[in-house]
Image (cartoon, rainbow over all chains, first blue to last red):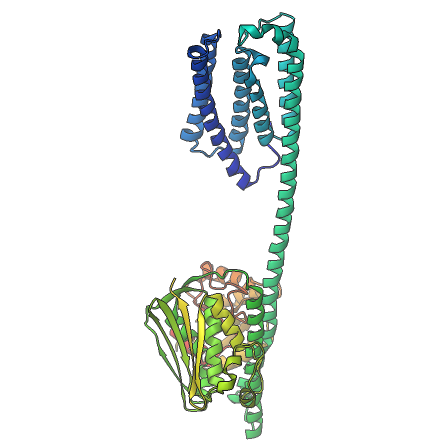
Length: 443
Length: 122
């Protein structure tokens, strides 16, 4: 028989757990029946067929022992789909049969525990598809109605729970049967429809999740495409400029050489702007999510980022100095650290006069990871220092030195530092230089 | 004389021209292919000291990675430099472990540095 609809892999693990849960419940039921029979005998002195009842109790024990050994010892709580289906059907079948006989020999419809069939129907509806549940309900009701009728017409004996109840039992047998059967049908119907609704809602959530996943994929594909489409041509442009500047294309006049050098500088600026815009879009769109972190060597990261600007530094005869313990590593995000360092180094280079030094230091101190980027550049006016992290802000001095710029660089740096739970401070002296300090909490 | 042949595989003809000219300027003998297919075919006859390979091709965004795997399988001793305009892992994680190449280089390339790097593998 089929188990409820298709089994997804997560449901598959869940269903395996349900089998384990059923086995535990059956042990509780087994102990419950045992103590109930003892109580009936010693406390209430009911006249029951104890031998038969203890025999069924023993059978329940044995059946559950077999299920337990198979599930826990042989399969270690992990049944295959086919085994699961067989196990569920066998368990449910034995439960109904044993419950029927235990109830039948203890007063049948006069026994209040007859409503335990409702729990069984609920569990059946929980596991199986509506079609199978319908089949179980039909068979169960047929058996119950036949047994009640057979009792009523005297074809089979009634095993009363109490002697005093016999008269009222016969009188009420039809209403009791109707009550029980309708409760069973309603329970099966309610559980099946609730289950169906939950499944429908689950499917809707899955569809929405898929939708969001595809949106996320579109977004990263878009960033990939934009990055490629914008940076690719610039790479070619820079290559052509360099060919002229290096004399590969033949001799050039001083004027042509100067013109191409300027074109090359503007192209480099354009690249910085594109990188800033893409990084800005990325940081903005990912605000809500947590960035992946891996262990990153800080010395390698600093060297990589300084390496990106070696030719620009050489043009201005600017010296790079870096102090960082070789084994210093932090749990961080490589992209974000690159964004922070490349922006600060690029800024320092832009606003530093020739023949100066840019220092990048990193250390761990007082439970914090401290990064410092220091230049000997033009510095920032005290009245403007509070604005430098604002989006699109560019001071008039910065504009005078470098025409191109988005004014996003430091806004991106601040946002990126914050994404990594860090803080950034700036110290600047007009005409003496600027120092950025970044602090990250140690993981 | 030492082998100084470089094979560049990139679908951007301008990159092939500029990278070729600038690496030639640095003293290398340049062979180039504008498709992965042609590039792989050329390896046998060129036997380059380093293969410079782009990632994104019109046929597929990650064709370069697939090509790198195929080349490494047949010529494990030839170093591959992946060269790409994608400079952030969020756009594409090109440092993932299953891509076994010697170097990842961002476009635009600093050819002086690239030349030094190639010499390390010669």
